[in-house]
Length: 80
Image (tube, rainbow, N blue to C red):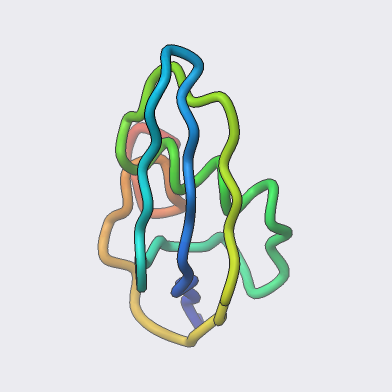
């Protein structure tokens, strides 16, 4: 079975102030058709970020690549 990961840049703002930027981040995907909202949720979950106010993803590329065990992703044992 083909597995997919997203490679993307992201910007997060927090409700208590501050922000975070990521470049070239990778997360496991359940399939190749993931929208930006779901990708943002997977990103926040993978880092256990609390108090996130907004997340924006851009420069998204979907690649065929084995899952690496992204927290909150399809290969996370807590999802099963």
